[in-house]
Image (cartoon, rainbow, N blue to C red; front, top):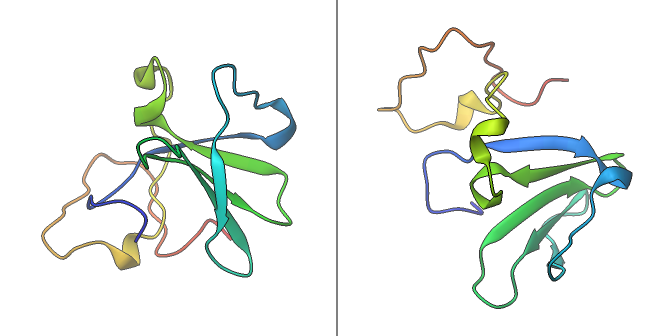
Length: 98
């Protein structure tokens, strides 16, 4: 688990289009397939990226205007806590979109 929360909202962007304008995150390889970016000063989780992928996910709560990126679907619902009900009508995937 990368966050002390029942879910994290991410916005996905082309990796080449993302520029950090105030500081840069540190990264750690969380598996043989992915790396996560975080603030070295406070530990806040910032990004997720598959090593061989061409996109990067940014935690929307870390953005200046998180409301600008409303959710479009729910991933990894097969791993959610049993008491969490998701009933907003958006598509749900037990794992990733693949």
